Length: 119
Image (cartoon, rainbow, N blue to C red; front, side, top):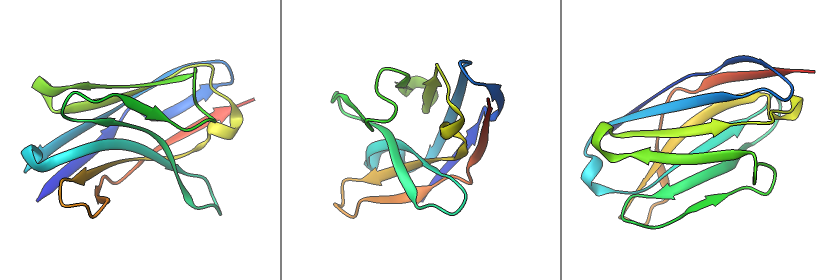
């Protein structure tokens, strides 16, 4: 099993910054991708950014390119999402997710952390 715990959410003003953290524990050796998703009230959960665990690059949603940066500290089993130039439309619950090498897609999720951006 894999456990994921997010932290770092909160309230920010438009134009401000926040950094989210996701600590991953358990059977981490079998993970292929770790990513961030977000869900605004009344909307579907959307992809934000992801990073591969074996030397690959990062991918971003168009809505956050140039503003958000995903990074991974393998020694700490932690993935970060640095968010800058925040906009009110970034307000959502942010979830950390992980996909294993089994080809089943994102199967592991954290409990989410709320990010609220005021105008």
